[in-house]
Image (cartoon, rainbow, N blue to C red):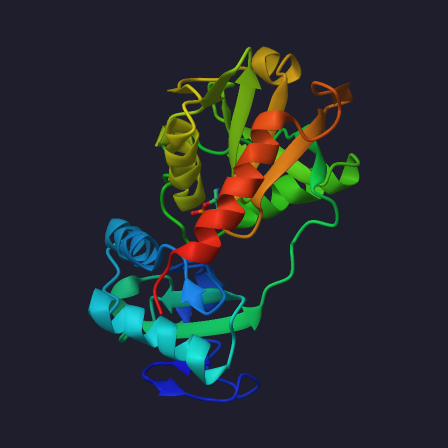
Length: 281
Ligand code: PLP
């Protein structure tokens, strides 16, 4: 793994208990995929990492170019071709108080692992959860911070209710996103996805919109209510880890035919093509 400019064995301890990422979730991260030795959407992920850091006033302490090179070198050092790569930047080591001014330099780590699909099945059952994705006075969901407790609570609730994925609503009751993915619903040949005010600006989401438009499938970015979810012809979620996965059941309602629909199937094909033919070496 990469640890503050050096490559060290992954079992070597690299962080202190006084690291504020560990103590308070004070930091940011990314999840990136490599396919056949090429890193998919590297610049977009590095841009989002730096934007997340900027939003919490965290100085990463290196340039975007150096971060890109460190990510690529982590992949090479691990001899990986198909991998999930996780850059992590924490506020650094401080004292037991939460004041970021008492922290030294940020800590930067990058780990890479062979990627296995996170989902047991690609036809998912989802539960809309009670915990909200955001409220006007809370941290923006656009920040990919080290504090994922809301998402973990959502996952716990979904698990407890027999779902493999959670669907968050926002504080207005609009559909926001999954616990680690963005959501698309299809009705009468039109694809709808929520605006990114209440969800993470997913890089796979942006790719999905591009791919849908390229295939002349109309996409509308607008607020989605629960009624629209329950009555959709198809639903799919997108994420770096999930790629595109069908949601075939929500809160006890079968969605469409209960199987992967034609638009989702097309998306899966298109993702396979684009992820294996583009990327940074
Ligand atoms: N929403 C959340 C909360 C996530 O953690 C992720 C994963 O990073 C996504 C959406 C999907 O974003 P991306 O497609 O950039 O991986």
